[in-house]
Image 1: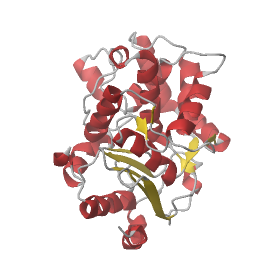
Image 2: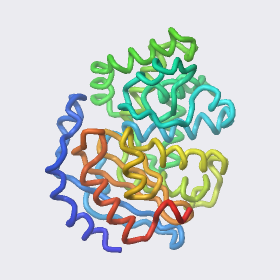
Image 3: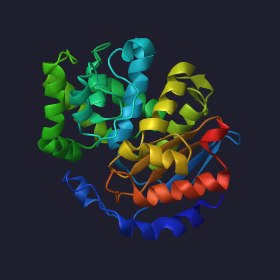
Image 4: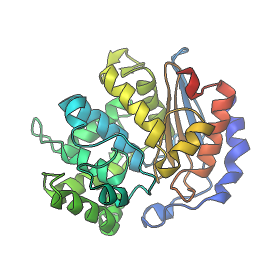
Length: 306
């Protein structure tokens, strides 16, 4: 399909959202951007258009990478003892339903409380800190050795992350998290501050779409059951509290980030990466979701085919 035409069709929709200026460093990003990359598993090639090679903060899409890494290292059954797989119906930084239900663990790994819990499970390994392990794995699964930490965004996240601190201390106070709060939050803020491109995200999506096997070298990176479980989570919880709505419209497992990224995995067919900074009220890229809907319709990828 003509990705340049998709960019042209949707670029004006950047006017309908706002960049995530509650994180000051993200507020400086040029909003008039839209980049798309699609990895076609059947053709074993990647195509892109627009601002697909512009680097931006991965933010919540890092939750997918860290969940895959921890599930690979500890085993899926051990991770699911610490975090559930349910939609919350509340914003990504809320714990209201945990309090209402007196839950014993966060409801899913893609809300902030669940992501912090998953990050806290990583232990130093072979002399590498948890973040060093994360970024090494991110570079491998995104097929992008240039992924790096943006110190300005990390410091901005750390400086303004009081809500996340409250979530972490809530987990600690209720015996859900046993690691050091400060160290776990530092790792979490750093993972959100990794710089990727839409092409990086298309590669990540392609590994998931290919059931955990890197299509560029045919080597397995994560177990099939972990890839399948993660795609299911993306379908039900990947777009914050708008996940159900967009699953019915777009019909492909997707995870968003407030840096403007979208990463989709159409099983056995495509990995898709999109970047466009202006967000809707739920924290999802406005132009990005519109472009993803057009791509989904054009390529005829919907959830009922999986």
